[in-house]
Image (cartoon, rainbow, N blue to C red):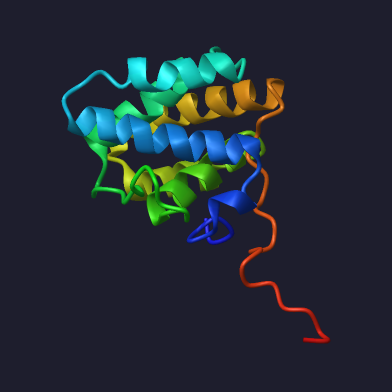
Length: 152
């Protein structure tokens, strides 16, 4: 999570930026009482990632309904990642590589126990779809606004 928190969006790869954009638009649509599918679905289609969209939607719906506490998401035009976005990017990234109980333990910190199993399924399926589309979120690049070189 800490690798992603408060990072400039421009330091994220294409998959990371897509996911942050989708999280922000999903939460905005849900808060406005609209179905987020019509706001977010076209971006998944354009990225050739429709196989991952139902799992993304399930992940967000589970968080919306069963979160232990409200996760912070950035405003649509915010240039940096929020804690909630960083946590989800980390979970999605980990889901493809981690079959241990560590992922379940982490998920249990943010979502009620009865929602952990479907959350793990959604995370794993989304991670797989992202990998197939070559959009798995990579660790961010160095913060381009704060890079200091030894000779400076």
